[in-house]
Image 1 (cartoon, helix red, strand yellow):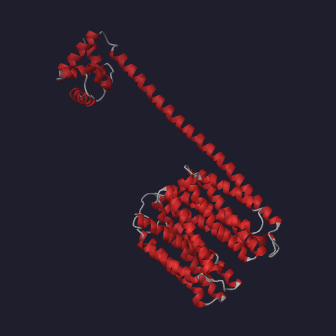
Image 2 (spheres, one colour; image 1 turned 90 degrees about the horizontal axis):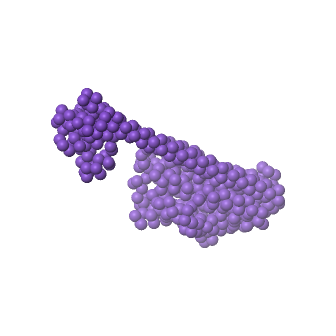
Image 3 (cartoon, one colour; image 1 turned 90 degrees about the vertical axis):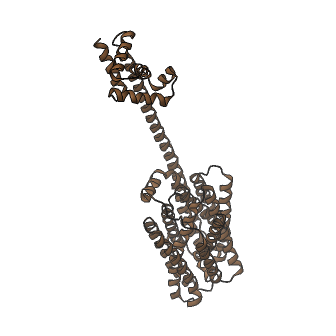
Length: 483
């Protein structure tokens, strides 16, 4: 089992590095023109988002074999996409197949490793996820420093990750039974206080991160912003790992709210420092959201992957949109991070954090009140049942002595016993049953075991051809009235 877990960490970490290389194509093909990189992004991000959307829809129903075949095809497509710039050249036309293959290949392969994390416990899977992000980002830093282009190391890492995927034990993956769609709907409707804040934080960080990357590139050049981004991501993974290890009770929503609030302040920092902090925030919010999905839906990997794929697709789409947001708002390239744009981003993030915090607090309060009302209703029902039982017992005891004296009562029981062939012990138990006594009282009165009393009671009912204590009482009263 330890070897299997190690292969999951190693394989996922290497694919994480490849994912980052594909996320920033200038690390994949630094010799390519700006037009090539822009065209690559124009096709890679939508292709990945569409693939993730398809996974989110079909993962709930497809057979396991088809799913695993999709993972294998994803690795092959990813490898072909990575090799395309080196084999076909850096013409703009080659960026189209490279982007589509990389985007469509990353979607099923990343979701495969996320699904394997459902085999871990809540704390363990969070730590593993933090480590794979940290190792993957550090590998990306190493590739950026020691290699002029990321094609060769990315291909090597992809093959190594695919090898780990072949050797990892995935036999229990997607073997759950039950109504997965109903489970997702229940989680999304009843668990809003859990997932709303992390999801909102992740999506805000995605959009703002893309916008700030575009603004900082125009102000300080591509190198400064990329270095800040590359450093910020492993810092975010380290912070996440430290939080998981230190915290005893992990409140994903509260941490996400603090991260979103801190990101509003980070917008006011100078230059690439903003990009560094937002890179860390983007990493933290993503790890928080994915860990929450895996934790809450660990028994249903298909449901967890459907939620992660949906959030992942929307996040990539928002990041891609964020790259073009400054231009749409009128921020000119090379003019620096204008105060108006930064102030707008800070106010938007801060306002969203406040709204989410307020809504979540109210939702928790309403949920608490609903639970209190539910518990109160259950307690009232139980008290009503106890009161009803006590009243019935009192009536039974009153009815037992309503017909005459103790002597007449005993004579009636003896007559019934002779008529139906009851033994002496059965007659004693009949006398107590007809008085409204329960099994516990009879056990204490006659020093008998509980099962013994129940056995006698069944035989008495069978001989007298009755089925309840009330019928025994009625029979005794009827015998007393005939005396």
